Length: 166
Image (cartoon, rainbow, N blue to C red):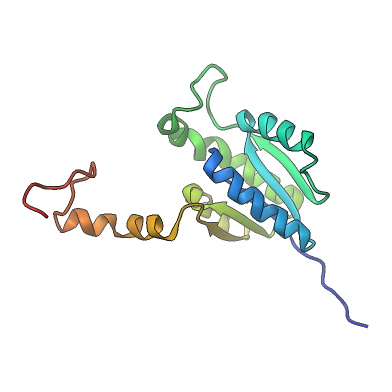
């Protein structure tokens, strides 16, 4: 008789935009299929819309817990203003995330690579963090090479090519 170790309780943290939430939700569903307990964290702004949509479709499996925390924006702010949201996201989310991790005794966080500021929690609360890329390998490679393209004078910091280049 083999003893199966319990699966870890994992927190999943997507960047609060549709193209980021959906891939991490798919990953969460697969992890639940393998017996993991998932706390899926959304901003308060996204939570109700996503939760209602999933609930109506019967798409919330047992083991997947939908939770929300503030994004640092006022209710009247334009939540489609990504720049404004990004500027306040880490300040608004770090403390509530840390509290959730401590209370729930989370040992693993899977965070969208666009939320890499969550790496600060690694040493603070003693957890393991895996960054998940929601964009293609080619876009990921481009992002890694952007500093070199700028340094070599191929493009400027706004992404415009220089006239002396091909």
